[in-house]
Image (cartoon, rainbow, N blue to C red; front, side, top):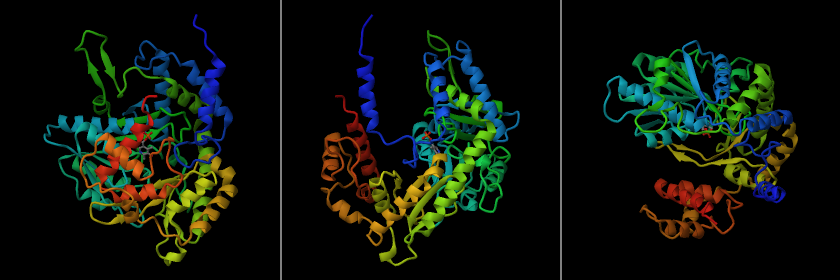
Length: 489
Ligand SMILES: *Cc1c(COP(=O)(O)O)cnc(C)c1O
């Protein structure tokens, strides 16, 4: 038997974890979704541990996997108003659900006899997972501009671009950048008429919008399987399902259609491979945790956690609106807010949302900086700061309000970082392809990648650079940044 020092190993891990952003307590307003119920986290951990040695690859050998998956899918289908013809899979996360929705639609499009390069049609606000799907699976991505002031999609602008080469239209419930609920019914009716598949990306909303109420007390307009043109829908368990990372649900309408999601081969000398999802061997941990959480909470438990989010979101939106110099973008549906500078005010009263986020971080609150973007029609979406509100936010509202107000007071009237100035700090880059060492040198020149891992304290200049550089250059530099983070030591 090899001997090892368990305590020393775990002590090192504990020290590493101590440097992480806090995963509990609501100080990080993106990435993590804290129910605030410690027993729920413990239940999830116990469930993960029980299936730790299981291989989710083969539910005929590890039958617990099939039972848990059926029950999770059953719960999701009922919540999302799917009929008997709605079936699905538990995937490893939102990205995988979206990739598989695109893959399925591409196969369905080909099966209809279409040839050439298929197209994904979606608003600019659609999650980047669809950019990834287009790249991975060889589709064109056609992005429809949204209203630059509100982030809202005008359904007609999407509908007028429906054509036979569209393999999949995508709308969000709601979108990640602005929390806008796309006009699902209008788009779905047009897609149905045109014979085009429609995915509803409810990755972030799927487990909370069923319990959401608009300010007037009404439910949001239908966005799930009640809408007949909807052919697939994704809803992440590791977001408002409060599960550990690694779980999402992808539901599809129609068994024949859903079978196109699978990969199967008997064309090698090993075991027959039949995979509904991208991975082969896979953990059943996040599935087991999700299953356990669903047993524990039931619809009532989810409803009461949603209620906590709803109240906190309303209060927080009112607080932001009350801060001179900031505005909430559009009319979000769901526990997300994007905050922009209030351009209706004179410059000396405006608050730049990125300077604001940098100051809030010094006070221990991690808000997420979102870059501005020029849309295909030339209109410009302003840079914003994103907040995802979770149930624990409710218990921290006073502290958070104080931090948000004080941060705004510190930077009111401070101009946004001038992209030209950010650029001037760099040697001329042009738009040539960069090799790894040149990219690393540029990052150092920009003061971004030093020896210490992680990002600089002030992120506003970094975001300005992201906006100012040609997109391929920015993307290459970011790849270098992340690549250098995991150089073998
Ligand atoms: C989070 C999210 C995704 C991607 O999910 P991951 O779990 O991060 O892979 C896709 N769409 C929306 C709307 C999301 O919020």
